[in-house]
Image 1 (cartoon, rainbow, N blue to C red):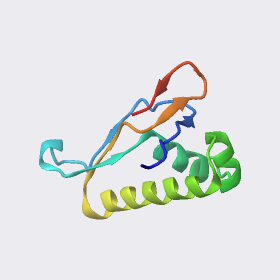
Image 2 (image 1 turned 30 degrees about the horizontal axis):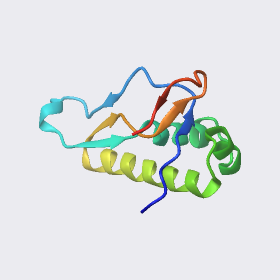
Image 3 (image 1 turned 90 degrees about the vertical axis):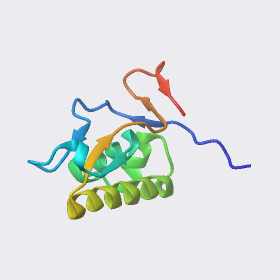
Image 4 (image 1 turned 30 degrees about the vertical axis):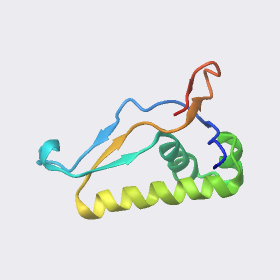
Amino acid sequence: MPRPIKCRMIGNKPDVVLFKPRGIPVTMLEDVKLTFEELEAIRLKDLEDLNQSDAAARMSISRATFQRILRSARGKITDALVNGKAIHIEGGNYKLSNFRRFCKCE
């Protein structure tokens, strides 16, 4: 039996949770599901320019786990951009770092 997944810390949930190619109705597109922790990993590494160790510490996970999440997120985003898919940001196993009482663990 696998070990249960621990919640990852994220800074906040985004206001926008859907991105799609312009001019194509979302109903006609395939989609990619990006989790909130994958978005947080991209934000910390690529937007805030943190190294993987510091970003992992912010998310309260190991560097190896951070690297796996980051690789998954980049793969999904690349697939969506190259193949013209919509990106839905939803779900995952996370806690909001600003509100420690809230936990959305699946």
